[in-house]
Amino acid sequence: MSGLIGKKVGMTSIFDENGKNIPCTVIQAGPCVVTQVRTEEVDGYSALQLGFDDKAEKRANKAELGHSKKAGTSPKKKVVEFKEFEGEYKLGDTVGVDIFTEGEFVDVVGVSKGKGFQGVVKRHGFAGVGQSTHGQHNRLRAPGSIGAGSDPSRVFKGMRMAGRMGGERVTVQNLRVLKVVPEKNLIVVKGCVPGHKNAYITVEK
Image (tube, rainbow, N blue to C red):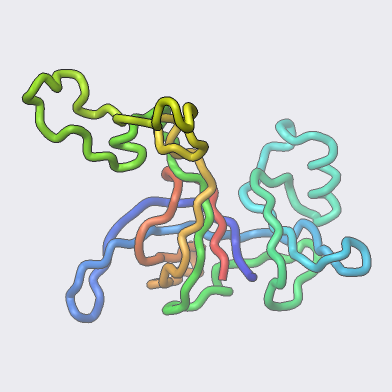
């Protein structure tokens, strides 16, 4: 599982060879610095720890400063481990978008936009009453019954009800890489990815 840490730049659209308009997302992926190399002998598993986006030294604690000093780099805002990384890398190496090729498929992991406390119509797609006649003046978007009375005389766990929506870790799989721009550290993937603009995401092969 190779990958990079990146930022969501925003959405746009491009035309394919048939003239079809394709919605896509622009991602600034890397450059990432190798901040630690995990090995079977020392850590019990093999992985590559990458850091992305410089952090001001005054905002880093002593542990972060020492960790980044070993790799010969500045403290990073986002640090992620990738297992089974393709290629040989050592501490302090830089990994860029050239690990991706146009046409391959990637998985993108991010935190979805938080939408606050929402009702069942927005959160779960309930239809509501559908018409405001026959005395239904205040039940248009209500959830309706949530269980029987005497038996089981409780509400089952997992009942779809109103609550906090969004702000969750989301993985979108099999997004095709439409374009790679190494000089600007950008990749363009087909479709949408979770998170707001400038949100941190990971792109995995």
